[in-house]
Image (cartoon, rainbow, N blue to C red; front, side, top):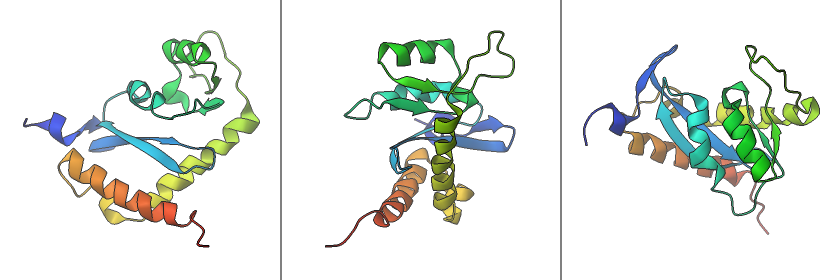
Length: 150
């Protein structure tokens, strides 16, 4: 197993990099991560992440990268509310709950907190497993602030 598929690196606008996708709970705490190559579409990570939670969420908050008819149909089938803004080139505009969508900033803040670690912000690790290991360590540190000692 050699090459870029083992490293999860690919070309994107930002250069030779990768994308880190996250499944988080309602408080913005990360539950699972999925790493894709830089040029992969965001919606490719949907299948890997949607089946992970034990309890189905009431709503899925995602950015425009997850705006696909297949994703919306799957969410409707699972009885999950899709809070995804439509792409600008969509012919039929789809409305979304803007108030609920504002809570997505919790995930962006979580990513900002994880990127305090330079190894995550600049991706020092060449192999995907090494990088995800560092992400999991940073996530454990992030979760510590939610744990209350008795």
